[in-house]
Image 1: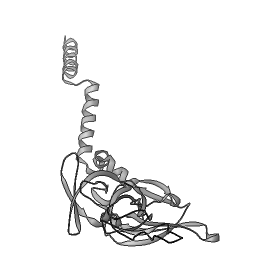
Image 2: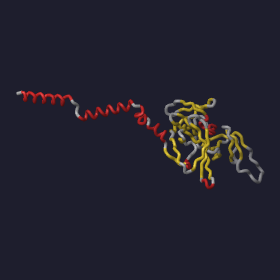
Image 3: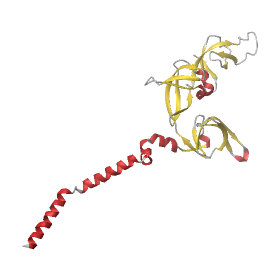
Image 4: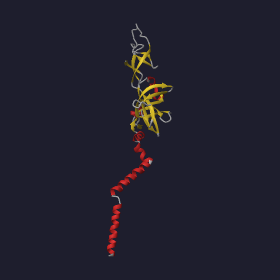
Length: 246
């Protein structure tokens, strides 16, 4: 009789355990939820997944010195630099090199470096965003984001020499890194008006191929002798050269 009671009591305990214990799948789910919650609480564990673009910006990719171009952003000795000038040269037995002027994106300081064309550099990718030029105020320019109509004010220096080409309603591009505007660019072709021009030299046997003309933005370019005051011409913003009549 006592044996029967012990067997019934043991069976009752087992049944109670089974009824109050979650299935294995529930254990796994609870463990996964706990792990995910812990990861969310840990800033170091969640930062990379939360900001994949920022991670890509910082990591960059390898590029050769021969591929360095104006506007590229590179990481060197723990600093982020933007290329503002570049010049390729060949130094005999030393091989081909490229001399670049770099601007520190944090401090604004400029340095000059020389790279071998086969030297591996770490490139940092930036994000291009379109804007519409509105007006200039002092040393700053006001731009508008075309989709949200939000206005942004940046330094005119971001456009370098091409700031002279800025006109009302012009479509421009800003390059951003880590939420900061690094540089600005204008279209490669811009229409300008000639406000001053040397007169045609009539009667000369040898007519000059080009003459200097003053544009409405204050720049002086070389243009063919037939270009007159009041005409609109297309100018390359890359090298400030005459391209064609507008």
